[in-house]
Length: 252
Length: 125
Image (cartoon, rainbow over all chains, first blue to last red; front, side, top):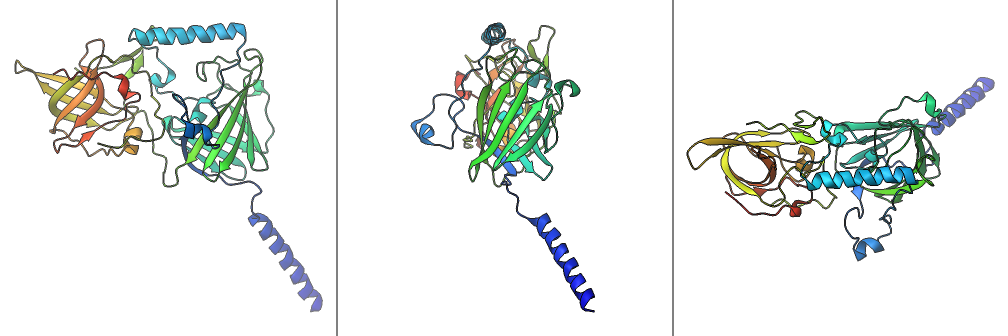
């Protein structure tokens, strides 16, 4: 009887340990929730913005190598000239294509993070873009990932910071009109800097295009009462014509 | 007037195909208030001086942006008489970018066009 009782005690203690293990608080913060882009993005920063340490400093330009720099500058000049003539060049948005990586992390519309044990899911409201960061999974070789808009992302936690790495971004996509190759590697460090302010330090590595890694920091502010809205391109009247110019169908 | 959001406003695409140097004021009857993405549309029949009716399509922003500014899909309905301020298409087609609209009850709504101050308002009839 005594043996049985102690055996039960052992089983009970084991069960309790397993239960505690399952419910043990995570060592990293759960920053799940809806956020909006935050900080000084357009125009000159105000004195208050410069003093606010939760607003990241203005990002520097891409450190492009001479050839890609010329391609980039020619592209910007073509965009400006087309806009000046009132015949804007069609971006992917005109065809209702989402941004892909890393542009979607710029959060044109509100963005949602869902932190779960094996995956951090990022949903961008505009164009209903979804990407998955697989936690503690091995990275794949670039050649083993089919090129796409969001690529293949793995991540791990370094203390309170989610560290993610992404490969497999289509070469046709552009982040702020900057060209890249199939070897683009995007590293992100995502962490709270205040209870409701999340930073994402995004570093792009692409040795054929960039002189050195290029880091841009994006800040998000929590939207406590906001649920992301649906976004379906139901009636897209804009289109790209044969010359790559944005046009619109008009009901007459 | 609906308060402008403090969050930065991004454009779905360039608005360079609309005239930034003049606006047109359209007094007309709503034939449809289309609540869709990537843009909402206000379809208007506008009576001309010669008595004929000309149809105008007014492009708005994303309904997601409009929702966050306080718009709802039932705020305007077919048959409403409204006054719309639009930046017309440069190519002359009967369409424009809606900058604001005044409803029958006098409320004036803005769809949150990015960099709206870059459109010079001349209020041509």
